[in-house]
Image 1 (cartoon, rainbow, N blue to C red):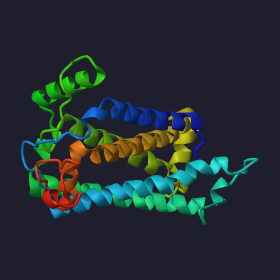
Image 2: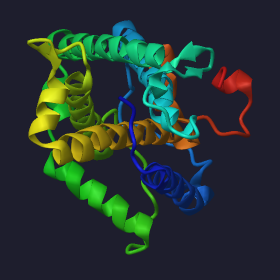
Image 3: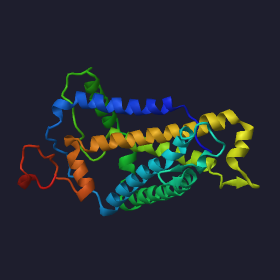
Image 4: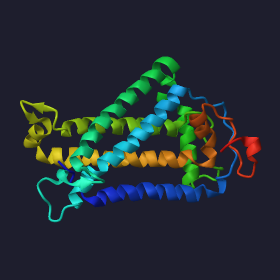
Length: 269
């Protein structure tokens, strides 16, 4: 089964994410080279870094393998009953979908291992999962400054986890849970008496299953991909270089290097 969602919706999400990044870049252009002092040195263990990059690459691969399933509907003119048998990048679309499903289950396993490690070994669950009033006030102040309601200078993250980091992770968890549930329901391998669960539920309520579940899976995937793209955008900003250094090398130096400083003073970028 391929998606038949109007491409306007997909392009709208792409335009929304791109517009936000461009607006943010325009608003923060003057402060791009600011040196940022973190309140504490940021540390990430080898396990945390391995899980972070593995999950990130896995999510990128999920987007790549899921894309042909959606694009299959546009590759046939006139449409045929079995678009999944089309070849895309050298493989049948149905092969892309099969790999997409098993890759999704593997990424879910990585997320569970990562969460369990942080909760049990690092003891960071409570610190990174709860929103404090101070964090929410700081986030509101930063939003007011960003939209122009306040003349205060734009602030930068002063620690490892702020309101926006936590909100980002909770949003990914919510979208990921929906993607997992909707994806499993759409998977023909899950059957009751030889009939796929999706087909049984579709007979009961076609509008909900096709209009909400399948379209919702695609929209959630696009939002998920958009958040990851924004995550990458923010990670490479000079202000966040200490956090990127910590996630790459294990620890930050507490100070984002200035572009004019020599590599001898700051080490490799």
